[in-house]
Amino acid sequence: SNEVDEVAWYLKNSGGKLHPSDGQQGKSPNNLDLFDMSGNVSEMCNEPFETLKDGNMLWTLCGGNFMSPASEVMANSKAGFDTNKKSPTIGFRLAIVRNEN
Image 1 (cartoon, helix red, strand yellow):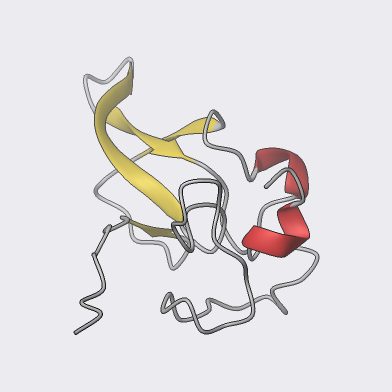
Image 2: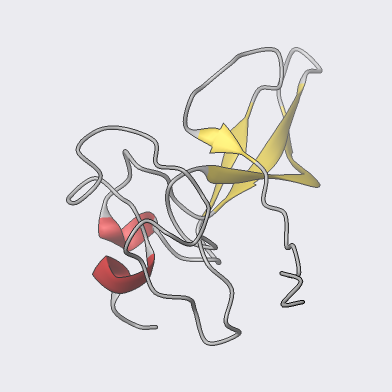
């Protein structure tokens, strides 16, 4: 969807908190019928972002999170992340096929 309010939890509508990713939280699936692929948590990717002057590596975060403005809640939005730090705004995404039987 091109309507961020329909598919994502972000700064304007999250209430400043993380939401369960179960497809039951009032958000619509995206064009591929996948829920929660935008917003809520930034996705930690296995892709280097930048090497710092001290030699430490930043890894890539994609998409926005529940504290991001709407402009950052897109798949092509990227930022760097130090894996030695923790943040409630970072996670990873799983695609699970629901068994309809």
